[in-house]
Length: 63
Image (cartoon, rainbow, N blue to C red; front, side, top):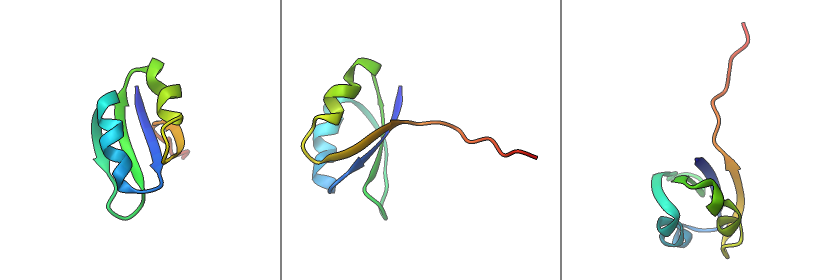
């Protein structure tokens, strides 16, 4: 499961690494892409420094 995790600061990235593979860390915003198990989502939400967690999705452009 791919998650988009909004964090308070970059120090939280090391805590997120133990839950899966870090896909990207945004340089401009405090956003981290994480590939992890669905069962770890609630644990990740409870980490001190994590603001928001949501599932990654692809947008569709209506024509």
